[in-house]
Image (cartoon, rainbow, N blue to C red; front, side):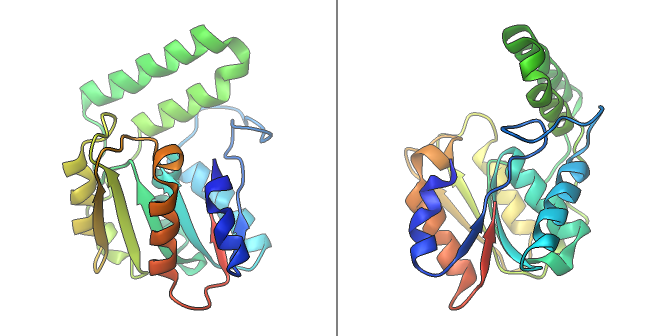
Length: 202
């Protein structure tokens, strides 16, 4: 997915694109997981490299980026996030994530266990509203106008809670910003980074 950011590498950005736990080549540690677990994993990746990063994430990646900025603020120089809101799930939302995880297990069997655990972690993510004003790094929240997974208004609310952040709604785009709005993501990275930012982690 992050091939979309390849032009940034030619502009001098160093791009680190880890597979989150349970995805790609990364292992699936014993369950259950929390979003903070994902953030801790990424913190180790960033800490083993340049030490700080502009963090980009959509959906699960967006939630991970927020948890990283809140739990490891010294590692984050900026944020570009989308497909996530600031609130925890209510009972209906938690049930939707549980059913999604069950469906993943039914379709993919053992090979889908990591993705199912990630879905369950999304269902139990915390309410960040009270903590988000602590984020002091530049941030842009990107929302697909046709996102059916996370309401645009929830994403707009996320931007309102992060001081000094900017919110941008992308017309005719759904939840999958990586596939459908790659240029918008790259442009947001440039705006957040300014001149000379050394790294992007996503």
